[in-house]
Length: 438
Ligand code: S3P
Image (cartoon, rainbow, N blue to C red):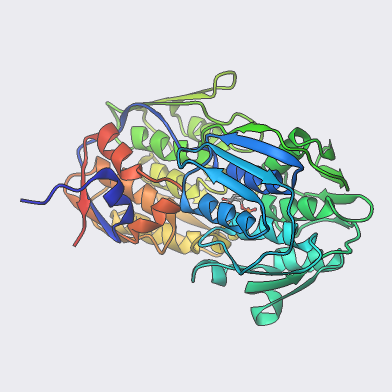
């Protein structure tokens, strides 16, 4: 007999075996939004006076950001239940190396904060994060006057930043990236003169929204956002649920033609985070997102293929693996293009999503900036590697729950970066069984 394993033990296993039972049915709330959580912690640390945050993401990514702000001499009281009191402002350069684990948002936004501090900061992360491009923030922060050095001419972490004495700039990032925009806006708070970021494709606006909430002087004019230098003031932040995590459950309701029905409550309803709902609607899903309550309702539906192009990608940048799995069971051929940025995520998500689909028996081909997915597949159990990427692991888990037989997901522990107790929710909503994999 297999020994009983508790829900939280399943977060830490390196391989998870899921034996399928059917699509997801039920009501749930997902963890606090990760993007908002990072920003709340960093702005609370920069602000004068206390900030109380509730609903904070309890994943390892945000825990690393909390660890980082402690190094600035900021007081952090965290009961471990998503409620945290942070009392800024930042008192000094970091006492030690800032370890961001797997968190791209954590390291890039914190780099913006460090650029504004008169002193030296060293930022690093795990072996996956240390392979991800940092020149996208290093170059504009240098233009503002910070010294940024790192491996391969500052392209990769560890990064060493000597900050202070910044001047505001006007900058158009080469990529559609909320992380780049946010790093510059946070640095701009301590620059001389205004800092403006002009985006070609608009991205999530959490930094703009939260700067205003902390009393920052920020102006949004179409795709152009400007921050004026100035102090922030502590406040109360209630973090809503993370739409990107809800996307897995939406797809979990849709992978079989009947029986699936999921309701996810209390999600963030602002700009740029729920475009996956529109994509699923275009695919024929019976899906509704109530913008007044933040409740998402999804019911089993027959899906059809969709074309996703460069215009679509910034709004679904984190949901492509889950949407690709939905495309695998849809009727017709789905073509995803203009998604080259996915190669710079927690894994090369074009390659890892392609391998993920193949492991479930789907016919898929990889292109330079996307993939072509042959729909109508009957998914079959297999063995999948997450490549250290939580979103690949969670997509694999919802697919595994819907197929007959046992699927083993290697690199399962990556899920703890954003969604502790995901396996417990999977078991509850789908009736699948989950145990450590061999
Ligand atoms: C995020 C921005 C996106 C997204 C990431 C979170 C943020 O990254 O993929 O998960 O919180 O700003 P990019 O800015 O690199 O597109």
